Image (cartoon, rainbow, N blue to C red; front, side):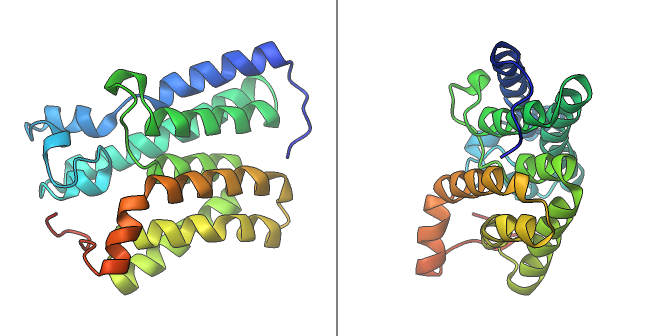
Length: 202
């Protein structure tokens, strides 16, 4: 845990603004801009980049990925520039919650993987890079996005400790637990052998 330097009222405002930024549904926005329809009625119904990719529109999927990761990173970087690392961690966590439970979509959002990666890259880039590398290796080996995300999330606290960035370990654990909770259905399909592969149809 970081040392608490920022006042609680300021942290509350940071959390609220981080949440609102995280609530911006880039998948929904890109699907509409590219004329793909309502993303919630396509594939898995998820609002993230993996489901956008199921439409076959790779530019829209890439822009969704960049937008979802970017809002987590932006929340962290702005909070850190204005205040301190405690505010940055709060902002990143709030942005993640905003993506998973967005006020603009009736609190029914995505699973938070891209936002989590963007948050970790901005907070502690060595941990973020290690998590991205973990995701990439598992994705290349098994071609299953959810499995790659779960592996990267599970290992992120370990990367934080091994890399000497222990002040981010608690946040890494909290985010990893939430990612596992958000992937409950995926875990059930993985166990059953029914989880779709990257680029495949739901």
